[in-house]
Image (tube, helix red, strand yellow):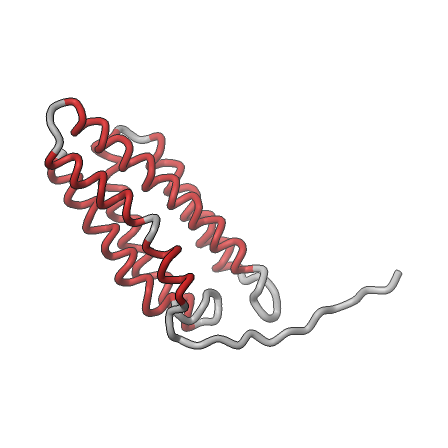
Length: 155
């Protein structure tokens, strides 16, 4: 059996591409809308918005675990252990936040997004994620962390 090997070079810039902006910020919009609903809608709608915002945030963390796993496949020289560990931490944190009581879940989401705001730029500089993550993730995930902190404080 002959084994083939595909050799490739990744070429990218540190600038955030249009699709990175769009698909980076679209998932944050329901978080912001849920926060606004929690603070400004009447009665029971506040609880609905809070719960839906928590479920959405957990789902996005689970999605980001998949993103990190997918990115590991593009790493020159093969998958690194830190990439697998990061993917598992994102996944388990997202799953735990989905299953936790709402008051705990909101704080978990705040901490989870704050951690990603710090971790993904490091991964970008190490070649484990697109270079533009170094610019996008601190603002994008930092915004999500602030939203979940505000929702947790208002809950």
